[in-house]
Length: 154
Length: 307
Image (cartoon, rainbow over all chains, first blue to last red; front, side, top):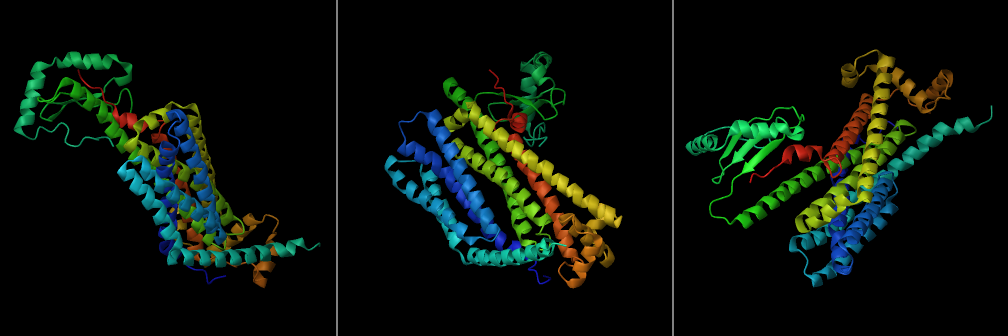
């Protein structure tokens, strides 16, 4: 138990890529949702389109937060929903060029999902995920060790 | 923050000096000040005059009577070669620019809150020794804080994006009741985060003090071997109150439970708590500036255009 990886070193090595992936996902949502609404649901009044883009983005933000929390707790399978959200953002934004959107917003909305996917696919992020699995296993072993004797009837 | 416009009040060149002379001779300053002070909302507001050559002249410094945060009445003179309609348009657009800055500040703040929330989540997950109790609690608290501040980060990013391409959307958002309730709910979660995490911090520090009899500074600097053993015992029994001291000792002897945590492990727990409190506070500050409670934005950007 004493051969713990130094937490500081762990954070220094992996936190930037972890946080980068989160920010990339959040900003791609913030950029893409209003763009979707402006392009695919043009007939909607401003009030409705604002409402749905905001609430939709908020819901997806919660998904992203939960996925990242599960990754931090050592369950790397949860990276897939993240990848799906980012992929959907990218693929959804791509055809919007048809509607001549604001150039800056359009290019950023394409850039952020790609950046997010790149970070998720990076060697560092993969390494971090596998380390977190090890840590989860150690944690579970410790919890078991602390709980076991109390189950015995005395 | 108290001086958002650097250089105000410094007549550092001839043209500013001339401008001050001209303004003071043209405008009945006591009357102007009296008019301003008659409005309870802006009593004691600073008065700044910007003339056509962009000479910024402070006619009166802000006095904190109506509010603590500075309010300034800015009288903006039209440029010489500009049509009145165009000037009116410019004046209308100007607050928009400052709003974009406000949204950008807000985004930075709430995203900084999110960063700290995630640091807490990640380090709470990595810290194994406390994981059976304290660190899982830290991670869960961090989860709440990270959720609220990441959601705020999204909201402010969304607002900033709108401010660039479609500001009408933000006005729409501000006028919606459900939006205000959502933001209030997020604020509430942040506040709960603040409450809960400061409680945990306090508990941990008090615990440190009670078991070791040292001040916070000394606690943070580090403990010696016996003190660490004492604190470890205390932490373990807090993790599981059913453990009697005898059972604890037996388990420690058999190697199931650690005898004492290393200094870095203990310091890490304290630092994580403090960081958590800090993160929750930043998240709260971020939401205080945003949409529904625009105190800071009002303080910085209170502008009344002179006719």
